[in-house]
Length: 214
Image (cartoon, rainbow, N blue to C red; front, side, top):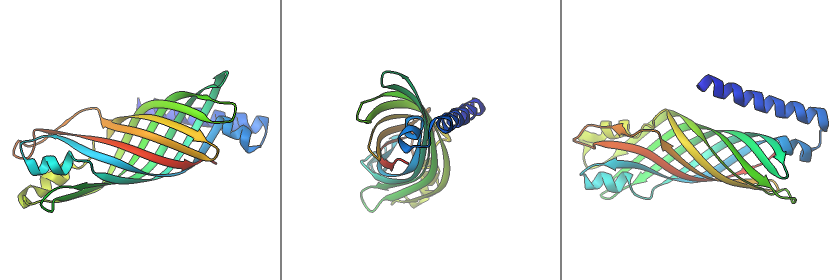
């Protein structure tokens, strides 16, 4: 499945670039079929937990903050009267910060690679309103936790590690050079944890990013 997905992405992007080369080198025409650029944003991560420990609930289930930075590439196929299908892949470095009571703190960093299929409508002034769904691949980098239960810290750091594959949903709008995305990420499954800390946990995140379209 992963192999077919990557092959499909490469094929779509190559086809978009080839079509652009055969028509014209103007930026407006290229943007009709292919776009890319940097992006940066904020997120609200949670580690949704089933636990009887009040401190952990406040730490991981609260409204926390995060930051994302990276880039995106999007191949597009206009099909009928403003309706456009697209495939988008991102490469984002994410830093999630969790804040709890009694000095409890936690953080997690990872690289995320969302791959989405979607569609939208392009208005005559060039504004593109779109929505997509797909999978996200995660590469964990580092995790750190500080709580009053010092003996639990290694387990908490393990719980902060995201599942390697999850799903992602995206709503976005492109206007002039800007590309804005509201994104929801979740894991396909909950992760079982030791009962003395939590019965299970699941990573969830809302993110808002702004990108510059080349």
